Image 1 (cartoon, helix red, strand yellow):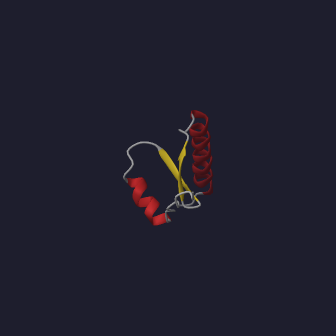
Image 2 (cartoon, rainbow, N blue to C red):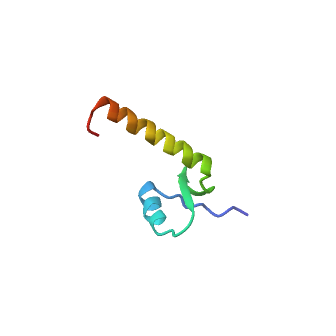
Image 3 (cartoon, rainbow, N blue to C red):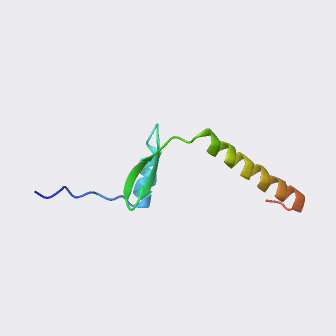
Length: 65
C-alpha cells in the first residue's frame, strides 16, 4: 500500500496559516510545517545583547537608522 501524498505548503500559504495559530512556533521546511521548541531564556538574552551592541554602534557612529 502506498503512503498518502503529503501536501506541501508554499511560503504565502504558510504565512497565512501561521497568522491563524494562537499558540506555538512553527517553521516551513521544504514545504512541511515543523513545530519549533519554545524559545529558551538563554536565546532571549543573546538577542538582547546583540540588539544592545547594534544600538550602541549606531549611536557611536552618529547615523540615523
